[in-house]
Image (cartoon, rainbow, N blue to C red; front, side):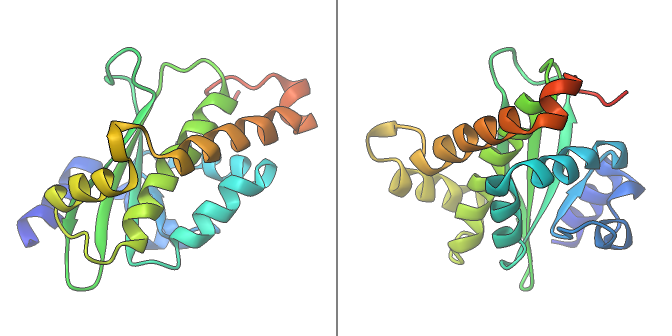
Length: 176
């Protein structure tokens, strides 16, 4: 367990400190690159769905590290996975495809992946990657994708599109 925690710190650097996360409204969601925190800050300001998911997530024992990743396979918008669990917390990594051209797309996928993290957070028995697979089988009979995550992504897309500041500014995936 300690080796896994140390690996997390080495892989993701100093920007994921609890002190840095506490400055944000959602301390359970930490960004590997502090410069990417605007995704959650701005996204939750314009999307009640994203704000609700992040708020609910912070009422679980889950801590999520978010990484905007340029190495994800084409066609894969994001992923969510369990890294390790301690007696106190469970640590997840969410990866977002950094090649998405629009900020609204990144925020919608963040909402989708945080919904998956919330599903894990609400299932206290999920402590290993194998447990995550079991949870997926329970939530998605027949191999379909979790409908709640699809609804969260769709709602966030609509809310972001309706947000006048984002619509008129035409924000790209990276802020100016």
